[in-house]
Image (cartoon, rainbow, N blue to C red; front, side, top):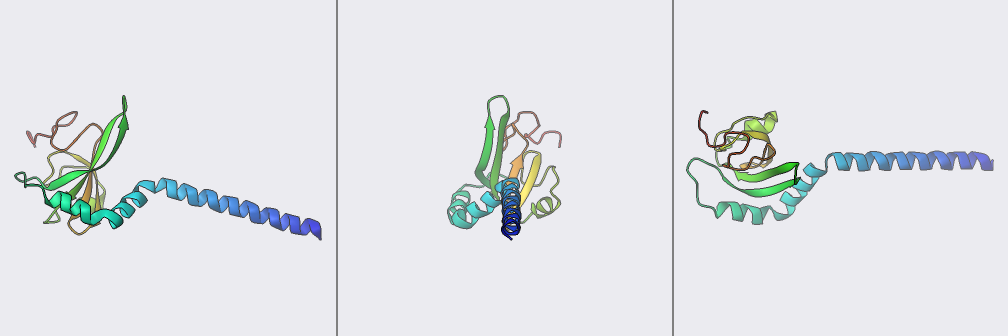
Length: 142
């Protein structure tokens, strides 16, 4: 009888540890999306004010640096928070495809939608808004 309880307890522990591993793995896998959504939920008002305080820059969308990462030798990746009053970026966020999009001066690696008119725009590593590195972000030839 006691060995049956130990066997069941052992199975329960194995199932618990397995569930914890799956949950931690899922959180790790989606950590950027979770962090982005939590950050937007808590501080969107302040971020919106910072973006809207900017003067318009020709045909470019209003934006601020939102996030980034990198280290020496690997390059720097920058993500921008973008206000798009016409929702030009909606299709890009839906498709998940890299490309050139209206109002953004450089090729974009990925666009994410936070809410209507508000997007995250991730450039390729070593590319920043309007600054030419590997890609031609000047608009010439496009």
